[in-house]
Length: 416
Image (tube, rainbow, N blue to C red; front, side, top):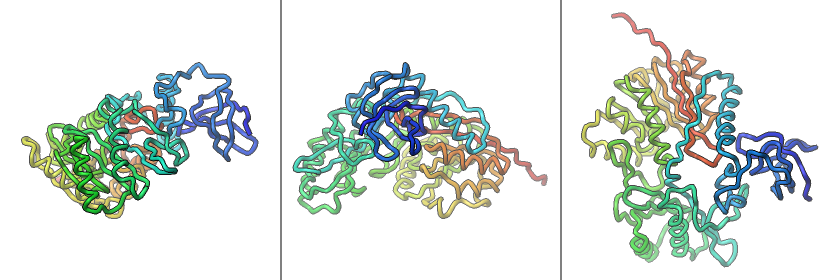
């Protein structure tokens, strides 16, 4: 049944919140002060119409915005959007009882997302290719994605559809990750399972027809026609198939700029949760670096990039699960600075070791404000000062936000 409500405020995920008789109701793609008609589904609702619009509303630039779950904020005017993202981070830190100066939001969208993951599903006789609708497994079919890099905008859906056609026999749900690299598109398919030899041969032919740099299934490389290189500082890295990569080129460059600036005086740096080395490779231009990452393939890729790049200082690598085996205090004390860039769950175990160490500088890079605040609070409680908090918006048009925090403390050197 449809009903009319007034939106009171926005939540951290960008949904509007209206007060209902049985509690708050979350409505997507609305703004505070708007009167809207909705259809409830428990504590969530489907937007039927905007009856009284906010002056901060604008027309979304993507024709799929109303149905697609990929973007959440295209209906917000730019100034309102930036203020909302900034204020959300302020609120998150205050909840953790952290008072620190938060710098203006930095737009790091650049040319757009350099990686997209499209879904191929077979709910009926037809094949459906696109993104998922909000809070649903229903596929919204798309011909292009306007927030992707120019080369990916239209080609990514076409590539996903071609791969789906080749693998549609078992009608398994497929997730197709497509990354733009210096040498072409790198495609990794998830969900299919082991391939038979005829399937492999057909995919090798498809990769040639589509001029892909690399094609893999669950990280198993079917064919690599050209190494899919990604430039990081002076180096060119060939990441393992399907491995982590910052969302945009400008986002990576912006984050790395703050990391290297903070560590400018450090002679020895530990880069923890290092991935394939977007920070390590840039830090190594002036400092010795020890890079630690759970994924062995990423460490091999980083090591190869270091060996192929002249002029870098010493870089050592270690494949290690920092959630189960964080670097301990004696190991940490060998470094002038520690850089953290953990997954969304944060780095609580590692931060607890840092809290009792003598490391004078910690640079925390996080894609989740809540876990950033939790980890920063632990370090602040042990004597670190949170000198800078820098929000970096590389996930534009979504509620996600990168945060860079620079924490220092005085370390008294023992006299000899």
